[in-house]
Length: 231
Image (tube, rainbow, N blue to C red; front, side, top):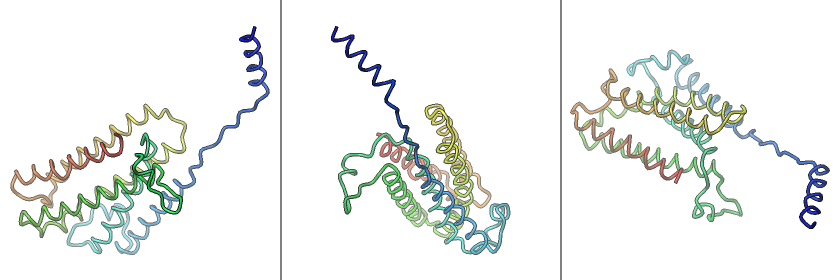
């Protein structure tokens, strides 16, 4: 009798109680994407002397200008959109990180992802410069980041599209994650080929230096970043 009574109470409650679905607010994603687009427009119009996207991607090193500033902008945009995209799939913010509060605020998934990716990207580039200096090919460093900026420009635009699909379309997140992860993996493999066989010869000539760079400054940092974010 008690069970039947509780069941009737529950059914009555369920019929009369209106469940309110809280709509996820993704305005912050729009602000980030619009800001990144404006940064790219500024870079093309100002730093790259009114170049179109095609002209920027096909320009030669000798004809380029403001390479370092352009590389910084592209790097920042890439880190920002990559963090925006990946943060939605981060399971949790580690307790040691969430316990750190400044003025009562703590890092959410996006903040944790952004700081982590930014730190890894900065350290990787510092080590890359030291690698070039240590192998006696420091003169190639400027050509390297000039060439790498083209790849990351295209990659960041693709990630912007992924962010739009991820946040503003009703998709199966599990299936979508497998698809997105597959595309990102293809980009990663393509980047290695792009670096090795690039006509600008951006990597050291000796094969073992190329192998050392790919293993220690490309593959290992990605594995470490994956472990930090998802485990």
